[in-house]
Amino acid sequence: MSLLFVVGIVVFFFGLLASIALHELGHMSFAKLFGVRVPQYMVGFGPTMWSRNKGETEYGVKWIPLGGYIRMIGMLPPRRDDAPGKLRGSSTGPFQSLIESARGAALEEVGPGDEDRVFYRKKWWQKVIIMFAGPFMNLVLAFLFISIVVMGIGVATYKPTIGAVSKCAIPAAQAGRDCTASDPMTPAVRAGLKPGDRIVSYEGQKIKSYEKLQELIRASGGRTVAMVVHRGDQDLTLSVPVTTNQMQSLTDPDKTEKVGFLGITPTSGRERQGPGTVVSAMSDLTTRTVGSLLNMPKKMVGVWNAAFSDRKRDPNGPIGVVGASRIGGEIAASHEPGLDKLAFFLMMLGTVNFAIGMFNLVPLLPLDGGHIAGALWEGLKRLLAKVARRPDPGHVDVAKALPLTYAMAAVIITMGALLIYADLVNPVRLNG
Image 1 (cartoon, rainbow, N blue to C red):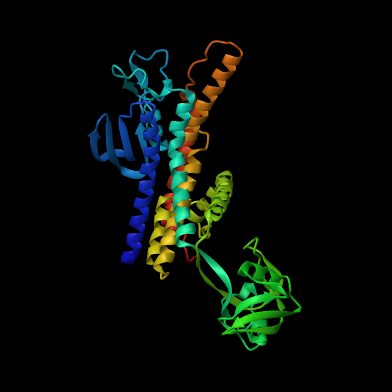
Image 2: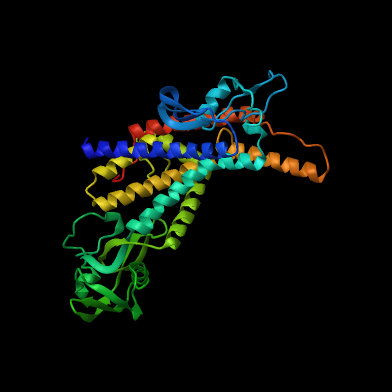
């Protein structure tokens, strides 16, 4: 195990911890803004490793670095039999909420002057903002990291300039083997194409991107095509007898299709993109993340099979903190240029932050989305009561959903444990 690999794991792990800390900072900032008393701000859970009191809040780090939480007084409204001045305790963070639920939502003291500083008495929209601020912080971090990569470092882009010419045509199913005497020469070799040639036009169409060139090549199988290339200081017109070959599908990597084949590999380089590309990347990430959340049960079956059998781990499936940190180590230890490492690192941090933010918005307790749903339901009930001129229905007690909370928390813990185990025994690897 190389030093760079270990450094990558540690740096990425602490990057995730910083993301968790900022998530909880989002909750705390708006809680204090709206006057809620926050006795604790913790990164991790379990026994306390270190803490320090500043003002009315204890700031600290716990020994189990798999989450974080803030404690706001009065997150749950009082029950009828609660003693005066005491409320059921609760916190942000699914793990800490489960611990407190198991303890029967232990009573916490509400001191003099704190009667209006309890969470449950705040306006419904203030509760929504407080609980949304945590996931929103992760989404902002995701946007920031992706923007740095896309607009600052640049995106790896293929260019319509030839980087290498394949000597023979090999079907996709046999990709990676050496050429043999029986393999036909590629159209690129027969036409005399050379590395460094920049494709100017193809079948009379001007070429400004490799994607456009690739599209035209795949559609021209079986025809001889006129191609203009720029070589040295002159333009050359070549006749290229494009053949067909069984190639990987561009829309479904698991399938192959018979398409036009030339036999060239493009050069690549980083190009800075505009805000529109960032928006497009975030939109695509949203679609993929929502799809992953909806398919989570099926994905976790795949993780189970990979953990307890010799089945290959799905590289696009869910990974845990251990697996993500391990990939951070692989990135650091790879032979890629430093700028590529940094871009991959930041993009992965952005993707993980986005996943954390979206997962926490699932409208089920003990996730933040469950508290948001409770606050929205309270606002709707009060609006309907006002329109119907009925008495104020009062605060919504989300603790009534404790049975569902127990079930959801158990699922989260089971998934987390399974992912950690799978990441240890059968991890996702960058290079397979």
